[in-house]
Image 1: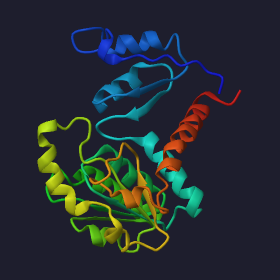
Image 2: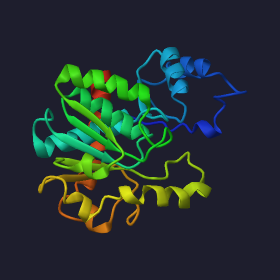
Image 3: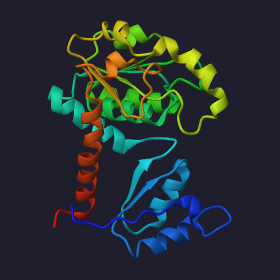
Image 4: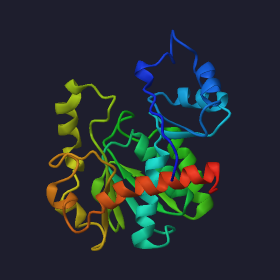
Amino acid sequence: MGGHAIYYHTGNSPMGSGKESIEDSMRAASRFVDVVMARLFAHADLVEMAAAATVPVINALTDDSHPCQVLADLLSIQETRGELAGVKLAYVGDGFNNVTHSLMTGGCKLGMEVAVASPAGASFQPRGDVVRACEDFAAASGGGLLVTEDPVEAVSGADVVYTDSWMSYHIPPEEEAERIALFMPYQVNGALMAHAKPDALFMNCLPARRGCEQTAEVIDGPQSIVFDQAENRLHAQKAVMLSLVGTT
């Protein structure tokens, strides 16, 4: 696109608690750049950045949401399915997850039938406020939302089956064995995919661990569009930048 990227690692920067304030950092940075794309843990920090900046601020990931990833996901589905409205998207695995929340939001706004299957408990199911908002989005768009503990119920008749890591970046390593045991019934394998439509797509936003959230036969099989999905992050995020700064 002919631009110039500057990588700024917040862990090694003067910005943050006990250092330069986020507000001052963004007011200064806005004098030098046309767009800020921020990948942070705390969503509140991103909101503060956007409020202080005088240039567009793009959410590249927070603990709350991952909209750029989901734009790429929706593009990937649209490339193969055409219309998004009416498409059934089943997410299986960790529902208390930024990708899950953004998939629910995007899918329900666009008239998709979104089903989420996760273990019981507030630490694994989608957040209640996100569920309530997405129910409203689905009612307005003609879509639907199902949240269940049953992976077969979620996947039955699905056009797309999606999963994500069981060990998100913020989860302590000492919880890994317990979480793998808990999530193993939610593994996307050939038996689970058999409940989806015969031509259903398989998606994972990566990184993926074969033998955990999905089997090798699924992610490396003919129904997988995982690497098309990965490529589409580039195209979707170019489109976001062009929409913000113009095409000239």
